[in-house]
Length: 228
Ligand code: URA
Ligand code: URA
Image 1 (tube, rainbow, N blue to C red):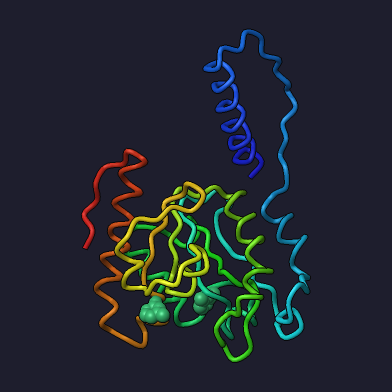
Image 2: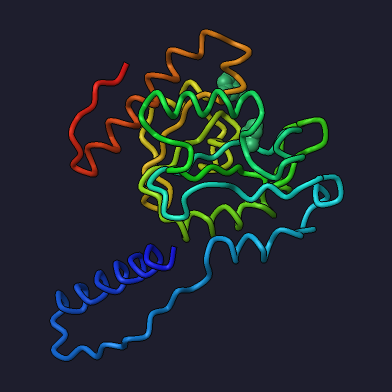
């Protein structure tokens, strides 16, 4: 853990040094002090008692997110459901089990990625997130993205994609275009819960995640994999 944080901090410092060198800096003073900043778990502890919106009163548990704090891939769902609210972990119900299968089918392990939601608390009866709730909660997601610095974001379903990208486009349209969020490549696919209701979404979802995997392999200079 310490060594992975140290590596990340050193990565940032060496990029900064390179920038100074490139800009023609003649003398560079090096500090041996390493600034760890806040860890993702410290951030979790800091916000877990949030009462910024009314969902703070009705939730059982705050659902921060789970996974690798240095993940290359970050998955963003809509909001916790009943199982997630009880457990405090995203995507642990039926949709979550299907998500695990989808990830495995393109050679991502759940532990390797980071999984979270637009809203960190369950809306009563799983109703849609309200704009005011999203507005209060988005800074938490933005901070997570800033800390984890994923190479790829994958939005699960229309609601996640619309709120992240600030658009009202349909999911069908959203799937077809290229998006970036803060310079990070965004893939958009169907929500696993939609797949459970509608078999016809399965094939396009698999196409989306295969494309995502191919993109991941390519930007990391990894050998092609047989995906089926
Ligand atoms: N659906 C979501 O959007 N998120 C979860 O965490 C679980 C189900
Ligand atoms: N419609 C939605 O709103 N979300 C999906 O994921 C699929 C269809």
